[in-house]
Amino acid sequence: MYLFHLFRSFSPIRNSIGFGASDFIQLGLALLLVLLVLARAWLEPAARKLAHHTGWCMLFLGALVVVLRLALLPLDPVPTPTGVDDFSYLLLGDTLAHFRLANPPHPMHRFFETNFVLQEPSYSSIYPIGPGIALALGQIVFGLPWAGVLLSMALLCGLCFWALRGWTSPGWALAGGLLAVCEFGPLNRWMNSYWGGAVSAIAGCLVFGALPRLRQRARTRDAVLMGLGLGLQMLSRPYESLFLDLSVVLFFLPELRRGTEWPKLAKIALPAALAIIPAVALLLCHNRAVTGSWTTLPYSLNRYLYGVPTTFTFQPNPVPHATLTEAQQLYYLGQAAAHGGTDSLARYLQRLASRTGFYRFFFLPPLFLGLPFFLLYLREFRYAWVALTLLIFALGSNFYPYFFPYYHAAATCLFLLVAVLGLERLSEWKVRGWQAGPLAARWILFLCGAHFLFWYGIHALGDEPMLRDMTAFETTPGINWGDPEGRVAVTRRLAEAPGKQLVFVRYFSTHEYREWIHNAAVATSRLTSIVSGYTTQPPSTARAWYGRSK
Image 1 (tube, rainbow, N blue to C red):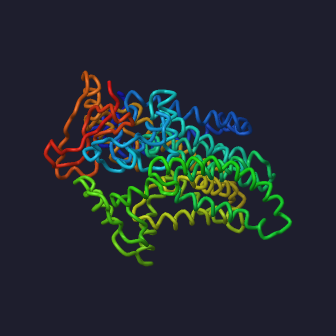
Image 2 (cartoon, rainbow, N blue to C red; image 1 turned 120 degrees about the vertical axis):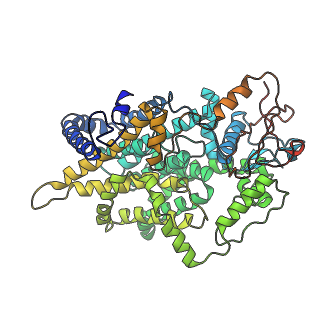
Image 3 (cartoon, rainbow, N blue to C red; image 1 turned 90 degrees about the vertical axis):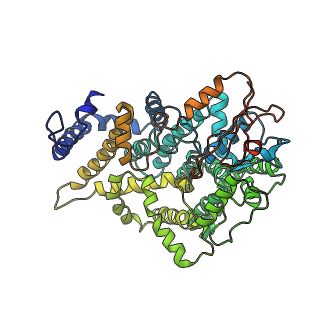
C-alpha cells in the first residue's frame, strides 16, 4: 500500500522520489525488458512442457482464474446486483435452485410488477434458462449464486485452451488460454455481474473446438461435444444460436459438395443430434412452464405484455398490451427511443460502424498490432471461415438497436484464435534475415500480461482513494469495489431485522435504470419483505417485493 502513495503523483515536485511521468515510463520499459528476458529463460521452457498436457493445462487455467478472483475479495467483494438484468437472472437461478421451472403467480401480483419479470401466467424471469443453470448450481452447491459465475468463467478459460488446441500448436494454444485469463478472468465484466456471457461462450468453445477435430477424425466424442455446444447456445442465446448453426453448416460446406464425404457427415450428425435433443426438450418445457405455450419464449411474452425488450430494427416498435407502471413506462420509452422507428440500409451500416469500439472487449490493446497478420491466412478456407463466422455474428446482431458484448459471447474463442494466429504469423516474420517476428510477438504477449498485472495490482493493493482515482481511466471496468451506493449495508440491515418487513422505496425523477430490490423465487403464500421499483406513486400503491421468509 505504501508503494501506491510513493508513486501517486507524476509531478517531480510533488513526488517523494522525484520521478516525473517520463521517468516512470522509462523505468517501466526497462523493467519490462528485464522481465521479458527472465521469462524467456525460465517460464517459456516450463510452459512448452505444460502445453502438451491438455487436461492439466485446462485445470491450471481454470484454477488460476478462481484463485486470482478470490484473492481480490477483501477489497472487491462478491458482486452486488445493481439492475433489472442482474435481478431477473438471479430470480431465474433461484427458481431453478428450488427445482422448478417457474413460480405460481402471486394473488396480488399487480402490486409486485417489476421490469424484466413476468407476473402471469407465472412469476418468472424473462430470460433463457442457460445462464440460470450456472447460478442455480452455485446456489445449490455453495449457497451463493455468484459461485456459479466464478466456476463458469474458470471453465470458459480452460475450454478456450481446448478449443485453440484444435486449431494451432500447444504452445500458442496455451498463450491463448493465458490471454483468456487476462481478458475474461477476474477483472472482466462477465465475472462481476449476473448477466454475463460465460455460458454462451462455453457453448461456442465446445462447437468451435470440436469442428477442426471432426474434420481430422470423425469421432463420436467430438460430435457429442459439438451437439452439446449447439444445445447450450440454444438455451442461452436462442437468436444467436442461429448464427452458430449456420457457421457449422458453412464449415462442412466442402464435404457437402463432395458426395463421397456424406457417410462421414452422417456419422457426425447422428450423435450430435442426439446430444441436442435434451436441450430442445428443456427449452420447450421451460417455455410451457413460464408462458403456457411450448413455442412461446418468456422473452417474447414479456415483449407482448410490456413492450420490452424492443424488437429488431426491421420490425415496428412493439405495443404494450398490459397496463404499465411508471417504471415500466420509462423502460418502454427508453427502448422505443433506442429502436428509433423504421430502419434503413444507411442506418444499418452507420450502426455497424459505430459498434467497432465494442470489439475492444475481446482484445487487449497490444493484440491489435498482431491482428493484421491474421489476414495472411485468409487464402485457406478454414481461416476464411473464421472471418466469415465473425462477420455473420456482427451482421446478425446489428439488427438489435443496442449492443452488449455477450451477443457475441459464442464467438469468444474465435476472437482469441484470430489474435493468436496473428501473433503466430508475426513470429515467422523476418527482416533481412533478422528474426524480428519472434521478439515482436513475445513483446506483444508480455505487454498483454503487464496490462493485466497493472490493473490487477490496482484492484488487489490499492486503497479507496487509489481505486477512485485510477479506475476512472480503466477501459470497460467491470469489477466492483467497496459499497459506494450502500446496497450491502441496506441488505445486511434488512437481513438482521426480525420477522417480516415491508419497505417502500421512493426514487428521484432522475433515477435512470438502477434497481434496488432482488426478487426471490418463493412460495407465493409466504409473503415477505421489500419493495421494488421506480415509482412516484403513494406508498399504498407502490410495488412490493416478496422474498424468502425468515
